[in-house]
Amino acid sequence: MKKTELLVTPTSIIHMKELIQAGADAFLVGEQFFGLRLAGEFSVEDIEVATKLTKAHNKKIYVAMNGLFHNDKVDLLAPYIQKMQKIGVDAIVFGDPSVIIARREAGVAIPLHWNTEQTATNYFTANYWGQRGATRAVLARELSLDEIVEVKENAEVQIEIQVHGMTCIFQSKRALLGNYFLFQDKAMEVENRSKNNNMFLHDKERSNKYPIYEDQNGTHIFSPNDMCMIDELDELLDAEIDSLKIDGVLHDPAYITTITGYYRQAIDAFYDSRSAYKEIKKELYKKIEEIQPPLRPLDTGFFFKETVY
Image (cartoon, rainbow, N blue to C red):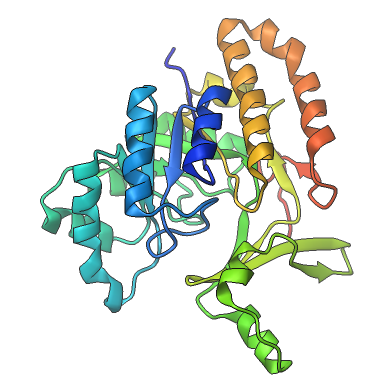
């Protein structure tokens, strides 16, 4: 049985070193000019250093180019992809078809991972993008466990899913926060808004608080809970899902590192023996509960029920 990859989003190169020690197999990095909702900002120079680090430890590095690109950015895609080819990254994560065209124009053969956040909901579409160059499909967070397994059984590409962290439930290209503060005759810089981990939309009816931040890609609103599947990995690993992702956006680096270590224990225990995993999974879940931020209760997302936000 092929061992499933543990993919993590680091906040910095220093953080990557800690995550390697914690057991991460692969990393998703990038900069907000090309990528969406990243845990940290990685310049081209940072990606070069990060790639050397991953190669030295037999890990993989993927670069986010999953933004929706307007005309003013499309001419910049091919040069950026050429730089990634020269650096030697393992794949580019994309959602906009312009990246496929740009890769062709750049004359490079970097593998592509298709990630459109919410529209990767069936194996027909996954295979469609596979026939156009993608080697992996990142499935929508809104799929149930049964749907994920069915996609994997019929997919001609690798399958990646998220198993821990926040999920984005809304994005607008508009600067909604900035406009709101301006309406109140207040000023708030974009840089501050993108780094503010304590800004929420309040839903009094459901007593929910939705994390919200703004960067140059617009405004992003997240789920009120953190997904946590550490005690429900059996069927995902049995189905040989290719990659399990821990999304660290808006979380403290120390938290992400600790969570990565727990998932490493869980995955390794499963491959050692099913009984070994069953013995530790509840205890690992309790450990995560102990370090979970008070405003971020845990749930299982859409895996077992129709979650309504």
